[in-house]
Image 1 (spheres, rainbow, N blue to C red):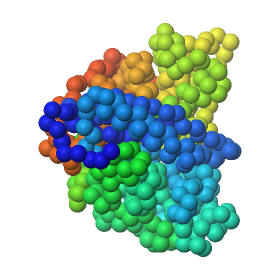
Image 2 (image 1 turned 120 degrees about the horizontal axis):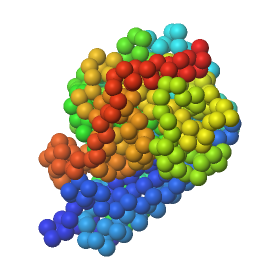
Image 3 (image 1 turned 90 degrees about the vertical axis):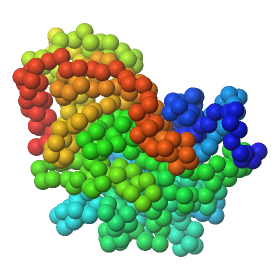
Image 4 (image 1 turned 180 degrees about the horizontal axis):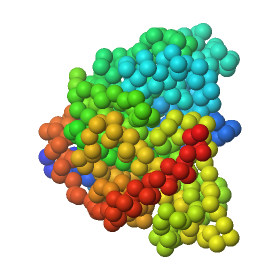
Length: 508
């Protein structure tokens, strides 16, 4: 099957992929900006030890290819002409593969991985201030380039591929673009590069001095592309039955920021998924982190052509993953939905004793503590399952409040608008708790679970002429439910003070 000219009797659409940490979905985003069809496949996440988090790159690729083929079949059956492919991916998950075989040489190192956190601490005194000024972020607890350098030094198969000149390195977007284009593209988009930890914000270039410091070979760096770059080759027609332009490649949270209307300074979003991310647009110049506010990162929101739109971000690593852990691994609850139902009937208040700190992968905000651990405390013989459920949602909501406060302080301005999305945001109980604690109206996007899927499709569609601008398509979408704060400022202050006391031992 080959590409054809557009038939005016058919609808246009974008084939959009949202490759997340725990699953891959593909959808057909129609020219109305809505999602016509979504296909999902779960992806395994492996924990070889308490600090390592890994995935199989082949499983990621095969799942992505499968959902794309199913979505294209739906498009053909429903007379939708696909104009382009768009990719949004989990960020900072690193891979190494052999160009000759097209196969990975080691498991992917997932963005939650902390195996080298202690090693990276040695760089903080010399490099934190330097990197914050240049990259918008300090050294941190993970560095894909450091991980790759260690694999080259320690894994014989990786070392052999490097010696033979066939080793390839990249993040998930690099891997998928390479596979989709039959090896024609070895690149990383700006929004993904920003999270890789060596991207010069103002120059749209690699910080080669930092990369060299980490021991990574400069010749393995992927090309830097805009998020809607025309340098990507078309997809290999043998894969999808059609050669599609690869019109947009984005980090998943950046794509969600677009879909949720974070297009101008002060507009923000909060996406609850495996982790929770709070992002805010800051305009045409980066708003760098400020002293005293930990874990808020400046980054390219997205690069459209030669123009970078900057943003701020803060995140906690374990939100949806904490709910999954409580339900599937520990068996405390049947499902996240049951947690919400039980929590809705539990008493709230500063005097309640049960508290949950969801620090299953460390804490970033309000203080940088990569070795912090989760805790469920304050239990007595009178504690009920409803109390524990409420403690879980309160702990998540307070952790997100810490992120929102940190971003607002770094912006030196309050949020002008805050929209929420992601699968965990489907809990009405959690959203009301969150609005009460934040003290702001929260608008849950009408299609909150597909924000990343739609955002990258919107960028691709603007490039391909489906819409004249991002504003046109974003503002045409239906408004969602608004959760208004139902508590007084004094109550919020009391709750936040108790939370700070609960959190303090984990920050000591």
